[in-house]
Length: 350
Image 1 (cartoon, rainbow, N blue to C red):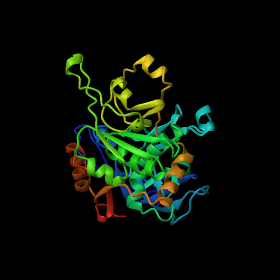
Image 2 (image 1 turned 90 degrees about the vertical axis):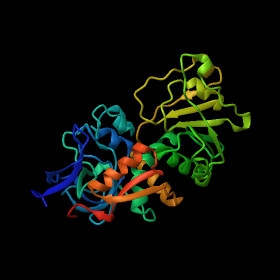
Image 3 (image 1 turned 180 degrees about the horizontal axis):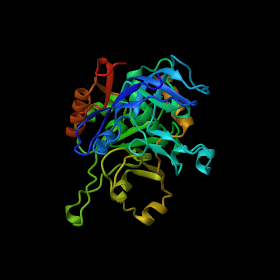
Image 4 (image 1 turned 135 degrees about the vertical axis):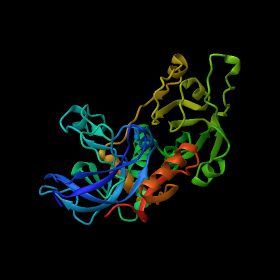
């Protein structure tokens, strides 16, 4: 197929979706994947005005491989993640943490990034992960982004089955955190801005649900009173998966002594941390981004082994399908992750 073209959906400065084409030129270590499904991430909604190709939760079938590819083979199901390049030689890459490479490239920042809302996608073999048998492609799609992100966060916090895990924000990320933490044997408490998702949280396996108002104001009298938990209900690990938490003081009443807080949600606002109240009980704040290659693969194997099934809404693989998914994300009605599926409709040739 070298010299032929592939078609993908991209953003534009106005936010309107555009259909674009690009030449297929397969390098010796690259893989050509025929995309069948792609999850829709909040990052895609943010990047739709950046003029880049959209989509980074692609799942499909290897169609062709370069002459030196050894990691996967034609006909194999694989998943594509946000990251598309790392240098492979810096201290972070050598240690296995390529997501922190200073030359890391991903959606919006690549020189030639075409996304996964498409017919075919090209990736270096190091950024293609096999999808295990027993993990359906429509479930695998959101797991190659949201799933691996929360799995990495839980591993970074050294979670064990003895820990109570708290999840702030029950959205695309947060609901995956609940599913993974429960599969690890942890008791899970969900903290949400309203009571509307209580039944869903409990159905996902959470043992407790609390309404948490993270609003802080300069007027102390206008700031909501802190949520009071008894000692046995305090969490050992707290994942921040939704909403902008700008003052970690509101989290203190939720935390057991020596608790670990892991922010994984993207936010542009700075945070304020109460210094002594965090130091005296031995609290830790651990920042986590994406996942190591090992944890990417382990997260998918873990999901297959424990039958983790994210709650998804499926749409056709088309401009109309993506527009509808973006609308559900924007108005907060998404439950809980969108997946574009060619089984429901395909606007592309492949």
